[in-house]
Each structure stands twice: as C-alpha cells, then as structure tokens.
Image (cartoon, rainbow, N blue to C red; front, side, top):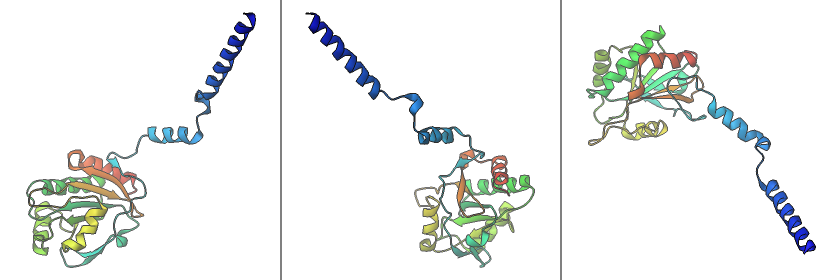
Length: 205
C-alpha cells in the first residue's frame, strides 16, 4: 500500500511539472510581440485616418482644365492633397472644395491640390473651369481630366468608387507625402479645414 501511495504521489509531481513547462511564461513573451503591441498603442500624429504604410500614390500624366499636363511625379518633394470630384456635382463636391479652400487658408499658403475626375464622360475643360470658379479654387486646384481607361488606374490606386448612374462616388480626400506615399485619408464625414491643415503641417507643408 505504501508503495502504491508513493508511486501515485510521484506521478502527480511529474504531471504538475510537465503542466508548468507547457504553460506560457508572461515574462518570456517574444520581443517582437511586445514591440508590436507598443507600436499599436502609439497614438498617430494625424487627425485623419492613417493609411497603411508603403502605399504609393499612382503616377499619371493627364491634362488639366487648361489642357496642361499634370503628373504626380512632378509634384514630388511637397505634400499633395488629392480629392475626387465631378463638374456637375451639386452637393458633396462643392462642399469638399470649400473644406480644402478653408484648409489652405488656415495653413497660410497653398500646397498642390489635385482633383481627379470621377465622371469622365461629362467632365470637360469648360465644366472644370466653371466648377473651380464657382468654388473660388481657380489657380489653387488642378482638375485632372481624361478618358475612363486613363482614369481607372487612379481610381483603383486610391481605392475610389467613381460616379455611376445609380451610385454616388466616394467623397474622400487623401494626403500624399513628399516621397509620393499615401499617408492620410479623410472621408467626407470626418473632414474639417482644421484637421486637413493640421495634417498638412505634420507632413511638413
């Protein structure tokens, strides 16, 4: 009987030891995991939504409202504000243009602003001129025009749904940094001139 009790106690000790070895030690957490947690908890300096790292703004060479060529590459070295408009829009587009105008006024100087057409079949140079004049953005915004096939890579690169007969386009503003990377996104419901101006300053504008 004594031998049986001694054997049972020994077996219990072995099991307990094995369980202790298998249980993860909080102090032994991999450094990478701890670092990831620290990164996640670090607050963003931006007021808008931070974009995933390493996403480049799609390059292009298209004509603006004056027939002049505009390219994203030519704007490197400065933060660029990109938005998505169409000339016959009566609600979201004029509101976006006013938000951008207010942000530039608060910033105290202009930065490159590119509006990419989302309704190429109806957006014309004359229509773009009229839209910019009505918004008070003539000389402060490049309205990029083109055929659907030319604009489609831009919509895809910025993850934008263009205008459709039964669907309103995505009203969104993207801030691109000096190296050509997308850094901050502003859905229309989260956009204010103050927030845009703040994030442009963070980007060094």
